[in-house]
Length: 240
Image (cartoon, rainbow, N blue to C red):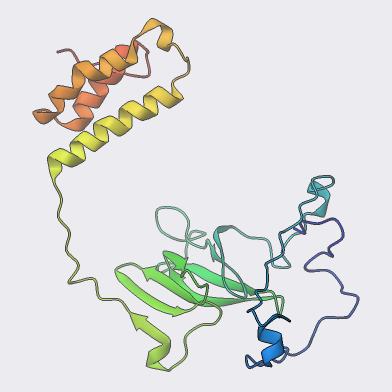
């Protein structure tokens, strides 16, 4: 979607035509007069601020030139976008009955230069783009690896780096986790209850009443009893 009303559609025809090859990169070595101003001080290129034209914003929306499908997890890369193409459906993991074997989702990359989408991961449960937009972290079951974000890995072992999680360790304090669960549940009820006044219930007092109980009771039981103080049919209360 072009932010400015005078910008052309990203996938439409261009006045100068679309390049058939990648443009040559500019040389990083510049003359001293390019690096410094007239007074000898270093010059800095200021990033232009984007222009957003609100009028006609909806009319400038254009679809991606890809076949219709179920796409999720849209993420930006250095030279385009990646998304997850949903292929697995239902309890059997297949789009239709009679398909043998497990069907996995695909990770696809769309290049703004070539205006084409390619499958970079044939089978994956999820994927995330690195901060610089050049690498892709993909997960398929218990396997996690890092690869290029804009093209599938080749036969070169260096193009696909597997991540070993067998040495990963973490410390978990159950009581601290239960307390966090109780406080988070109380916050969600406070922010999303259907009435601001809780229909006359003092919610802060109800939370304070049940807060000491979490040390000896499961967090789900205490949270359910606390929510029951709101006296609503959708928030059951366990007798004490």
